[in-house]
Length: 510
Image (cartoon, rainbow, N blue to C red; front, side, top):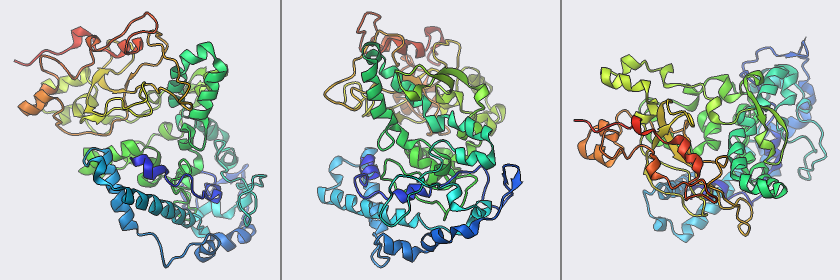
């Protein structure tokens, strides 16, 4: 249901100019600090911007050009009320009939109009807040283009950092930009890796068709996965324009923001984790932290040094590519944030027995709440892949029986990607085909003493989450239906790589 209002403006008028103001990104703030330009002091060329600012520095001019009436704006309180109903239905707090067809139509209309208003608001520029960047001519980043925007605006490069930020390298250095171009934020290589593995049975017999499916599902910048990939501008200058429907636009009149606000940047793409975080995670509900309170490492946002990355297939080029290079195969290679950054084990646990658990368990294993697993587009039969909240623990390192135990998430395999009439073949017996279970490092549902299993709820003791006779919280081989004979069992044989070894299953407490 959330996707209804998130994308409902997608077929409406999309003002390409909003993306044009995504501008070049910066790792500096807007405090006017000096930026060198090819080793020289930056020459003030702001006088060249008078023609641009004649429109973009005037809200009334923008309103006139784009037909916005400030005396009859969208009722935002009503829009928020309707959106809250959608979210409540999505989370099972209300039934599907809680929203009438008339209210759905009203929500669609209000969302479309609000998106247009927000886009226009996001075109306003204030030169004074741009710091050093305000001394640059607009055309130093927004170069001439042969792409037509509309009948009243010059043809310019709409998003100067869509290529990964070459325009930024002139001042900020090539190393930063080259690292970012290989980063998981820009390439979405972790997702691409999973898509390529899902397509393997098709790639084995028809690589061209597999590549076509990949291009339509992953690489399409209007509706595919790449519609959410981040550019320099979409984090440091504008709010992300997602799938042509989220309003996007400048966050603060073209200010170059050092540390983006979570609500304006991170949660536009990571909204699923964001909703869980805001509503349930103790760090948000009791401490008031934001995404960037913990995720501060430059490696997580701008990417690791390419010399530190493994060299492998460039998954984001698709299953048929033979290109190799520095690549991040999954999120786990990038994450630097750790609970121990703030929490000392001994100080946090005044019980030696509990403290000893950290040698074998990830922090999330004990401190998470039940969560929904990925379903819908990831379901192997095209239907819902388990709309039930639960917790499942398994190995945190695939195939390493000595690794800590932590959260697993179940990610089913898409029945089709772009063509419902031509389902993608499956081969659960192929050990190189993607597993459905995977270690999760992105669950933001932390609680101090969550009661997860039925036994724990009954006893009121968190110990019983694990220490029950059935050990239901752990992924066991007996729960999987696997076979190495094609087409395999109901579960991919690779799922066995995440199973908790029997000798590590805890017994019931006396």
